[in-house]
Structures are given as structure tokens and as C-alpha cells.
Image 1 (cartoon, rainbow, N blue to C red):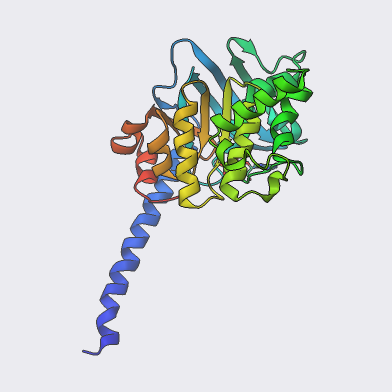
Image 2: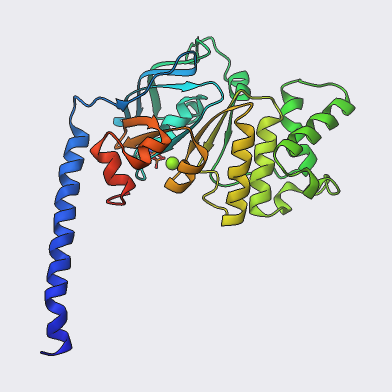
Length: 297
Ligand SMILES: Nc1ncnc2c1ncn2[C@@H]1O[C@H](COP(=O)(O)OP(=O)(O)O)[C@@H](O)[C@H]1O
Ligand SMILES: [Mg+2]
């Protein structure tokens, strides 16, 4: 038998195995599109910081988030995971009304922060976004000095009037973001001159400078190297003592390392919410299981 012939049965077996996986995927996707879906696990907590009920989000005619109900506890770190395009970012943006900035986007349902309806038409979104801050995928410091990046929020929100108080907020925020020692001698240099990991910590300092209660993070480490990522993950653990943190991540290892609960999204639906350890060892939903074992995503 030639080597070429010898590889054929292997190829065939591989193709067959792939086909089986594909079929399984189709079955799973069918399960995901069933209309009477219900989230499994523990979606609700006592005294939630955020309470979301029946959230539906549309971009024009296209629905991106379906009937999501979820509580987020005070000072909890909750991770949102799921295949690309499943609605994680869209859902996250509901929590501080960032979807308002997208013209064709429409949010339905009830979302309360400490019992206050954040979609109340009389609500001013500026203070809301100070209470619920956001850190994005790509570090986006303003084209300003390191100092001004952090001082900007407290200034526009009128939190301080005296320069010494502002100095104090800038220092405290940079310290809490684990960046102070690296930048204290060059506060007047541009924030954009820092490394990627430092820029992301600067953005975190900028977010915490206005004393938020909740920090939303949308894949905050996806543009960072492993060392910078580890630094941010440590920081998340420290910040969770004082803040509620919702983090979207495409890294299951990261979700496992930083969060207490994990929410698994699939095609716009919230399939499962459970203690993180359970989600990664013994999930309740077959789709979660398929995702964490790498069958799609
Ligand atoms: N600004 C937008 N305009 C139109 N469709 C969008 C917009 N943002 C996201 N979508 C669509 O909504 C769905 C969910 O996207 P997204 O929330 O970004 O998913 P994820 O963050 O899980 O990758 C996708 O089908 C995506 O194409
Ligand atoms: Mg996203």
C-alpha cells in the first residue's frame, strides 16, 4: 500500500467525524431557535444591582437579543460568554443605554438599576453613564495628557472645583487602576503614548474617576498581550471589592478566572446563567456544554 492510499481511510474517518459534528451543530442550532426557549440556571439574585426583565433588542427589523431576564448582584463579577454575534455586546450596551447612540437600535423590556427604570424617558443618560461606566475592547484614551484623561470625567460631571481635589482623584484613580507608579513622573505626556496594556488601565482609571457603581467591560483584554491581560485580570479581582463588574469575554479561561457567575448567550438568547465553576464543569444546557467543549464559537 502506498502512503497516499494509507491516508485515505483516515481522511474518510475524519470527514465522517466532522460531518457528525456538523449535524450535531445543526441540531443544536435548531434547539437554540426554538421559540419557547427558557433560560436555565439561576438568573435571579436577592437585592440585585441590575434587574433586567424581558429585554428585546432590535437593529431595524433584525432582532439581536431575545427575551433576556437577568439579575446582577451588587459587587458581583458576572461574565458574558458565547459565540461571536450572539448579542453579548448588544446586551451589555443596554445596561448604560449606549445602544441609544446607534440610530437603528431599539430596546424593549424593563431594566432597573437599584430599582430605578433606566429607560424612563425623563432620565438623563449622562449621570447614568457615570454610574455605569464602560471599558471597551480597544483602549481608547482621549488625545490628551494622562492627567487630563483621568481628570476629564470628574471635571465635566462637576465633581470637584479645586485643583488639589482633582489631583487627588487623578492619583487615587491611577493607583486603583494599578498604573500610578508607571506614570506618576509623566502625567503631562499623552495617554496615547502608553503601551496597549497601560492604555487600557488608563481607560479603567478614567472610568473609576467618576466613582461609578458598575463597570461594563466589553472584551477589555482582546487587544492585549498575556502579561497585560494578567494585569487587568488582577485588577478586576481588586475592583470587585467596590464595584459591580459585567465583563464580556471570548476567553473561557478568563471568564473562569475572574467571574463568580457566568451567562451563556447563543443567537441572541440567554441560554444559561450559573455559578462560573458549574458552567465550566457541569453546565445545565447542552448548548453551553457544546460551546465550552469547543464544538462551536
Ligand atoms: N450597530 C449595529 N447595527 C446592526 N446590527 C448590529 C449592530 N451591532 C450588532 N449588530 C448585530 O447584532 C447581533 C449581535 O451582535 P453583538 O451584540 O455585537 O454580538 P457579540 O458581541 O456577541 O459578538 C449580530 O447579528 C450583529 O450583526
Ligand atoms: Mg461583542
